Image 1 (cartoon, rainbow, N blue to C red):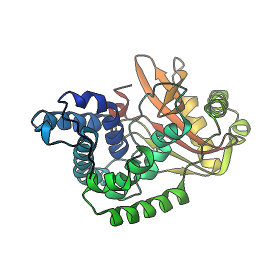
Image 2 (tube, rainbow, N blue to C red):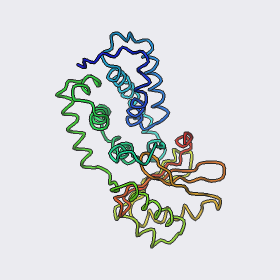
Image 3 (cartoon, rainbow, N blue to C red):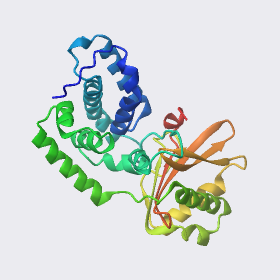
Length: 287
C-alpha cells in the first residue's frame, strides 16, 4: 500500500503528462490515449479525494485499467486491419531527452511491446519506463506482488530476446537517416543497398487508406526495389524534412497540401535493420 496523503483535487494536472505517456505506450494510439486520459479526468472529478492516499498511484491505476479494457477491442480490430499495423507516430519534445526515454517511445519498441500480453505490457512499462515499485505495480494492475514479479521476468526476457537496435546517439541516428534520405532521392541501388543489413525488413502502414505494401518486405533486394520504386513515382513537388518523431530523428515526407508519410529507421548507427513507414492519413492527422 502507498501511504502518501494527496487529497488535492487539482493534482490531476500535475500527473497528466505521465498518464498520457502510460496510455500512449499501452495503446500505440494518440487518439485513444487522449480518450483514456479524459475519462480518467472525469472519474477524478467524482472521486472523494480525502479517500485517496496518492493521486499518482490512483490515477495510474485508473488509466492502466482503462487501457487494459481498450486493448481487448483493439486486438480484435487489428486482426482485421488492412496490412501491417504500426503505432501512431508522435512528435517528441527535445533532442536532449535521455536515450532511455527515447528508446521506450520509439516505434520499434512500441511494436515489440505488442508481442507482450496486455498485463505483461502494463507491468513492464510501469516498472521499467515509469519507475513504479513492485508493490505499486501490483496494486495498479490488481495482481499480487509475486505474480507481478513473474510477469515482469517474462516480459524482460521477451524484450531482451527481441530488443530493437539503437544508435549510440541521436547524432549517429541522424547521420544514418540523412544517408538513407539521400539514397532514396538519388536512386542508385548500390548506394541504397550499402546502407542495409542483410536481415532488413520494411513495414508500411497504410490501413487500406493509402498505398503501402500489405505484407512486410524482407531482404536487401526486395526492400531496395520497393523503396527506390516508390521514390521514382513520387511527385516532383514532394519534400523531405527531418524531425524528431517518437524520440528519434525521422523522415517526414510532404506532398503539396498534406503530410504524406513518416519513415522511422531501426539502426545501430552502421546499418539499417528495419524501416517502418506510416502513411495512413488517420495516423498522420495530429502531426
